Image (cartoon, rainbow, N blue to C red; front, top):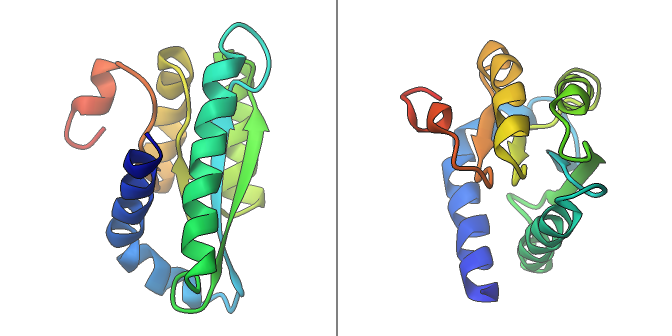
Length: 140
C-alpha cells in the first residue's frame, strides 16, 4: 500500500512539471497542494487515510530535496463529505491559497461539487477517490 501511494505521488510530480514551471515564476519557496476531504463525518476514516498517504508521499519527496529544490506542502480542509462544504473549500484553496493542484479528494458527491471550479480554473485534479463517471470524461 505504501509503495502504491509513493508511486502515485511520484506520478503526480511528473505530470505537474509544466505547472511547476509556471508556479516558479511566483518566487515561492514552496509548492502548495490542496485537498478538500472528509476529515469528519461518515467518511472521515477514508479522508484521514488519504491525507496520511499524500503526506507520506510529500514527505518522501521533500526528504529527497523536493521539486527543483522547493518543498511540497499540503493544505487539507475538512468538507465532512458534504458537497455544500466542498465548494467553499475549493474556492479558498484555489483563489486565496493559490494551490498548484488539488490532490486526493475523497468522495463522489464532493468530487462532482469540485468540478465546476476545477474546470473554470483549469487546475490539475489529481487522484480523487471517487467512482464518479464525470471524472472519466475528457476533460473531466
